Length: 115
Image (cartoon, rainbow, N blue to C red; front, top):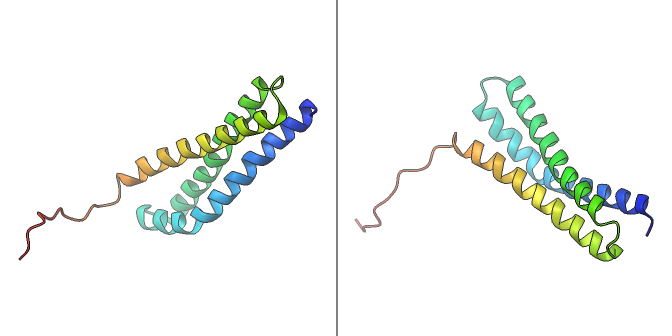
């Protein structure tokens, strides 16, 4: 497979995966950010920021992997690109979850005793 086709395919895999994750998260994330932020503009900013980060991080990892796998068999290269894309999404989601989790109150702990 030509190197430019591998690069294009790596970018498309990453962008498609990011789009799927963002479609699943956008509405719930918008609702949560609206509750947490003091203004609608603040919520809109953080939603846009999250979208950019969940697009750029996987794309960067996928393109880095494709850069170093030009001499690898095409199927193995695409497999590594997919792994890098999912790793980028996982890291991005973990980071977002960690930060948002600080602002969500936990219910009081129960002792587990029957009353």
